[in-house]
Length: 79
Length: 79
Length: 125
Length: 125
Image (cartoon, rainbow over all chains, first blue to last red; front, side):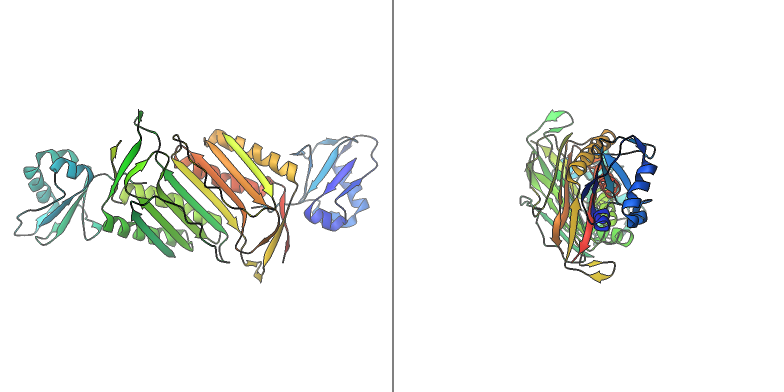
């Protein structure tokens, strides 16, 4: 599974993209648990950030597939 | 008393300005009565138009002085 | 609030004014002449103003509205005379710290203009 | 509704687009970088976008909003990278037959942009 990090998420992880080993579909809760295991400081963004896939926000109960490209979207501040 | 006519009021009266003989203060009701005596077709604008003096709209109960310059303001349509 | 009001037969060319460091929002409105009026095809509209009163009333309305919607500056230009289809009859630019008062002032001013400012469409060509 | 969305590091120079004969109202908004952020004096802001998703979401938001506020066209340009104080971060121009839907679309879009479009201010300089 590919994960993209933007803005504060990239600053916290120090990377803009990584591959994480996922073999079966997983819930967004499990996904976040795994991300935070890899990057403990991401915990500060967990409640305020949303996940996206295919240029669309994922619902909170989404099931993430191993082949998905998942994007971590911290609170936006455009305009 | 000087009276200025704009837009539809000017079209109806055929003039943009005239002096009318007024010797004593008068109500806006009496003023309109006199205008319509001079220009009967102005009756069609009476309820929809407002009067102004000194760059300000006059209240309905205004007293008009013989020295005033009174402006007949048909419904506006700027913008 | 800095207010500039101009009524003129000149073609309106919206100024691209510099913005000072306190400004975060510039909202503009341009009202253009459409090619039909009351379902009739037209080529132009003719506008007329009672200029001194129109300018005075616009100043007063903007001053009143700025009490409720604080903005830094407003520039209003209204064209009079014959205005061909597709060209601007009015242009307004509002500068403010934030967008909410700029939008509110702009919309409220246009509503009041159409009620209380002595400017008229007098003819269609 | 015709929609154009552009995210680019280029300086924003609002296009003075011609207006066709069905258009009576052009409303624009320009968001500019202010000289202070959280009471600190700054010289620039740095913006970042997740560009493909930001463009897709802006298109979708505008399409949704145009159902409620029918307009002819919308042009949106958002600058990214380093934007000095006084320069535009975003410019939106809405063309419509009448001013009410143009104002409504503009204000609603800006609200939604600040919630749902993946663009961030990442740094102050």
